Length: 464
Image (cartoon, rainbow, N blue to C red):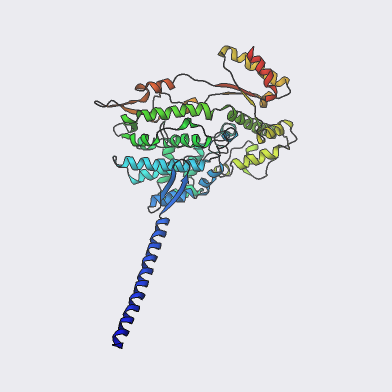
C-alpha cells in the first residue's frame, strides 16, 4: 500500500513539474511572438491620423523605416512646415518631418484601396511610397521663405538627394533596387509611368495637399482646412484608358469641400498679414546681410560653415544645403542683434522679438495704387528708414498653386470627376460644379509692409 501511495506522489510531482515546464514554454512562446510582432511594425502617434503604422515584415516596409532613420529625413524635424506661421498662430510649430510621415500614410492607404480594383505592381507601389515620404527632403530653412533670396528650388535638391551616392537616402534606395532612385526622382519630376500613380504624389488632388491642409488647419487652430478625407479616398479611381486619376460621381461634393478648404486656408492662413509681415522682415535682414558682406562690411558668421558660403553669395552643394536648417538661420540672426550696422541689428531685433512691420491692404483701383505706393515709400524714407529694407510690396504671386483653376495640358494640373449616373463620363470638375467655378473668379491681395512707426502717416494718406 505504501508503495502505491509513493508511486502516486511521484506521479503527481512529475505531472506538476511537466505542467510548470509546459506553462513556461507557452509563456515564453507568447513573449517571443509579441516581441516579434513589435519588431514587425513601427508605430507613430500622429495628431492628424492618430496612429501611423508602418509594417516592417516586408522588404518595402523595412525600406520605409530605413529611409525615415536617415540623416536627411531626420533633418526635417528641424524645419517648420509653415515657415514663420508660428509668429501668427502660436500652435503652428509642426515640422516637415510630421507632414512627410502623414503623406506616406495617405499614399499607403490610397494604394491599398486602388490595388483592390486595379493591377499595381509592388515595384510601382514602393516607388510611390518612397516619393511620398521623401518629397520634402530638399527643403531649406523655414520652408519656402528664403528660396527666392538664395535662388534655389527645394525640388531640385530633393531629386539630387534621391539620386546621390553621397546621401544616406540615395544609398538606401539603391541597396533596395538599382532602378529605385531614378523611379522616385521621376515621380517628383512628374515623368513617372503610369501617370495616374505619379499624380498621387504631385497633382491638384494629391496626398501632399491632403495632409498639409488637415495638419495646418489643426495646428494653427483655423478650421478652414477641414474636408472629408475618407470620402475622397473612397471615391478615387484610375481612368486606365487616359492614364489619370479621377473621382467617382459620389465624391464630387467632397472634392468641392477640399477645394474650398484650400481657398480659405490660403486667404486666412498662408497669406495672413502678420505671417507675411514676418517673412518680409526675414527677407529684408537676409538681403541686408548679403549686401553688407558683398560691400566688405562686417557681418558675423560661423567660419567654415555653409552659412558663410551663403553670405559669400555662392551656390551651396547638396551636402552644404542639407547642413542648414531653421536653427542655423535663427542662431545667426540672434548674433546680428549686436551688429555694428544699425539696419541689420534693428531688423534682427524686430524679427527675434516679433516687432513686425505693419501690413496694409491696398483696396483701391489699380490706377491709384502706384501713386499711393510712391507716397508711402517717401513717408518711410522721410521717417529715417531705408526703403530698400523697410518697405515692401506683397502680392499674391503664388495664387495658381493655392487656388484651383482649370488648366490645359497635363492631367495632373486638373481634377477630373465622374459626371452622371445613367451615362457617366469623366470631365474636368469646373465643367460640372458651380461651386468650383465660383472659386475660380479673379482674386488678388496687394499689400505694402512698413515699420509701425510710420503707420499713422500712411493711414492718413489712405483715408484721403
